[in-house]
Image 1: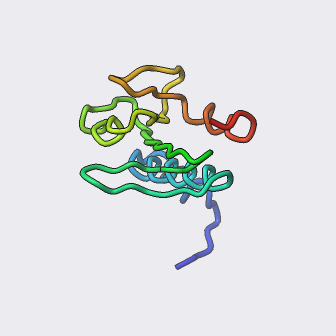
Image 2: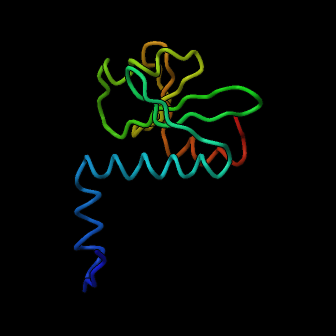
Length: 117
């Protein structure tokens, strides 16, 4: 139900972005929507999940979104199965996590329309 609020930013938006679980869902949905502007996108659910999968130049590209400060090995289990998989996250620098490269999510999304993979 949609209801009127006198201060929607304070009453609805701030509580949502301050809740780590809700913020994570919002970031993942925003990233998927952004990718969908440029590619046909999919979601993979197998033993684990991959948040975004897209095709470009007849190749499959899996992307995991992690909006947290710490990644656990179980978070990487599915994305590690793909040699060209990447993680987009909250960090400020590019890092290597086991055999998967992790990029700052805002930086990477900003590059999608200028330097496609």
